[in-house]
Image 1 (cartoon, one colour):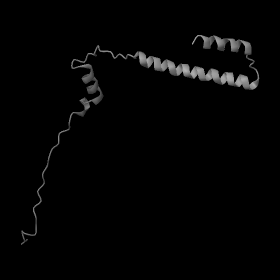
Image 2 (cartoon, one colour; image 1 turned 180 degrees about the horizontal axis):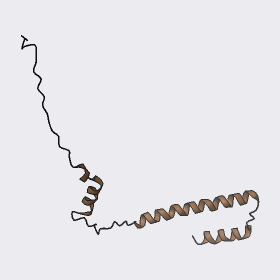
Image 3 (cartoon, helix red, strand yellow; image 1 turned 120 degrees about the vertical axis):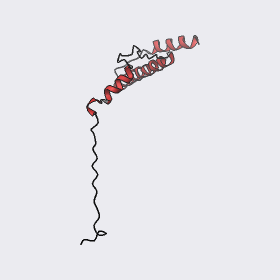
Image 4 (cartoon, rainbow, N blue to C red; image 1 turned 90 degrees about the vertical axis):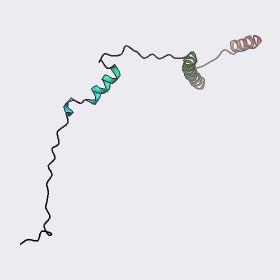
Length: 102
């Protein structure tokens, strides 16, 4: 006779797992539907960006500074090469005119 305390009964539990319907789940489409609205129509809302006058001025001033720097570099190189011969009388006259108007 077999000792019943030595033998443990093994119980087997079978559990059936039904597959989830994953073929109908598309997170990208679901996200777009959420954005577009429940009925699937696209929103008529359009985004609009307005730039303030101060921002436009800042943008233009940076462009002007770049242009000035390029002109200064060009004048420096012309002066160093000797290809620039300024008219001293005209320069003096323009300086006097400028300082008299201040």
